[in-house]
Length: 441
Image (cartoon, rainbow, N blue to C red; front, top):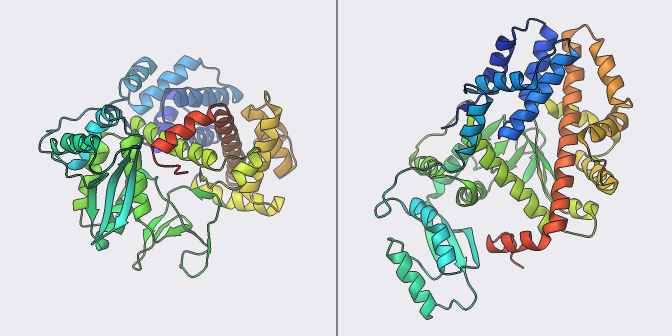
């Protein structure tokens, strides 16, 4: 098992290993770690380069490999070699189960690939409907697979041999009582900080001042997860009264990217009588990587489903989630106020601009353009002004603005890269998403 990711502990360990005492430098290292995407070996190398540059800018020259080892030790490994070896060997986790007597969820998880390949199933996806509770099912389809055909008989025979009770082209995965649905969804959100699908943007979390989300983009830190007595779930400043969407998304993640440990967690949630009102759970590197892969697929899916001739038209009709830190919210509002535009439109306009530049899509170039447009200063000048500030609280405000621009730039580059990938591989993605039931036409 890969050690868990606790960013506060990691930054504290890095600072101690480097014997840092300068409070401004300590603050910078804390900010770099806090804003880092630590999901795999490449992301850890990127973090190492950022810390090395920060140290060099402050008069501490240190080798990249030494910084990489320091980060590896902070995460819980002997050095970066053991870190890399561990990550490469944890792509598939294995848990012993009894194929004859264990749950439907675990058995279908193990049999999925064999079933799809053996019968050349063309579509397979999670479905949901309400009948004496909320039912979550696997829906599978193949052209020519009629109810009484020889092939359908063989499929039913195969499924029944493992204890399944197929009905037409449906395998029941789980049935959740009405009064338990929100609890299961809430506990999934608490642990994974993903899979939330909002319906409304709440202005003050009273549920009385809201606006619907229609092809809009939402910005989540998962810092504030709540439930209301009238069946609403709230995450940050967004809400939904459709908790089944969260469970459906989670099961989609499990069967496409997850592990048997995820199923164990879900089955515990089904039996749990209480809401997990605890602090944010830390994740393993493997779990973070899998969740990130699922979220990336949702972005690709949205672009494929809404694909137009231009990136502007495609993104305008797409709905995305943007991962942010909680401290960024006031700066995002500040940017919208300064520019008289929404963050969505700022991102779309810059995606269009940098896609046309082709070979000039470096993150530094995107940051530079955003700094000039949003704050009227070149990035280097902004940093120079920031470094001259003596008051640590004022410095932090400038530094948080800087990090907010950095995150926006990374999102622009991320979306541009995905759009280019979709343009080159549209038919492949369309076929994959048709099979997964994401695209039905």
